[in-house]
Structure formats: C-alpha cells, structure tokens
Length: 116
Image 1 (tube, rainbow, N blue to C red):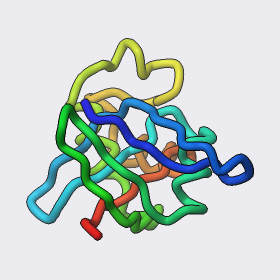
Image 2 (tube, helix red, strand yellow):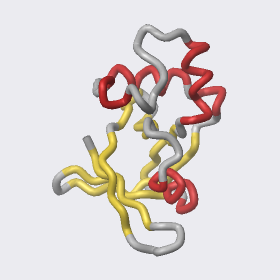
Image 3 (tube, rainbow, N blue to C red):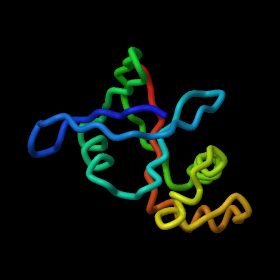
Image 4 (cartoon, rainbow, N blue to C red):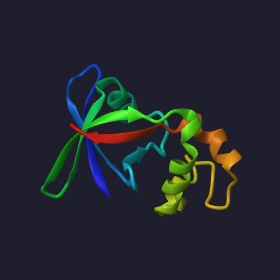
C-alpha cells in the first residue's frame, strides 16, 4: 500500500489517500477503484502526485490510460485483494468477463505513473 499526495484544485492544500499500485512489466499504475473521488479529480487537474511508502517518496507524472485499454488493469487490481471492501464500488469480480470490466471502465480512472 502507498500514500498518494496531491494538491487540492481549489484549496491548494495537500491531501493524502492510501492506494494499492498495479505493478506491470512496463511500469506502475493507479487504478481508482472508488470512482471519481476528489483525489482523482485533483490528481487529473495537477497532472502529477507524490507517492510515499515509509521513507520512500516518488514524484510522478500521471498519464491517464484510455478507456479502451483499461480492462487488464482493472482485472489486475481485483487480483491484489480487498475485494470485500471494493465490492460496493467495483462491480466486477475475478470471474467477470472482459465485457463486464469494459462496462465499468468509465467509472474507474487508470493512471500510468511516470517518474519525473
């Protein structure tokens, strides 16, 4: 688990939220399982966030993954666990079809995290 820290769009205040990262061969991804939260909106507007875990801090740029490419990342996020907690927000399971994941893709932003 990591903390993502981003400045508020209107307040300029920093906010931190715990997230799980999806690790792929080509990089790290943040799957917004709780939908269009203020953290997601702030991050999208800022275009960058700080990730931290213990003493490790990484400033990263965000590249939003297009809807048509989100299915593997949504499926991978389900594989990381926490499905009971996610169930009210994430209407798919590990047994769901690609079509089911594609149907929920508009509700869940996926960002590739690129080091600055």
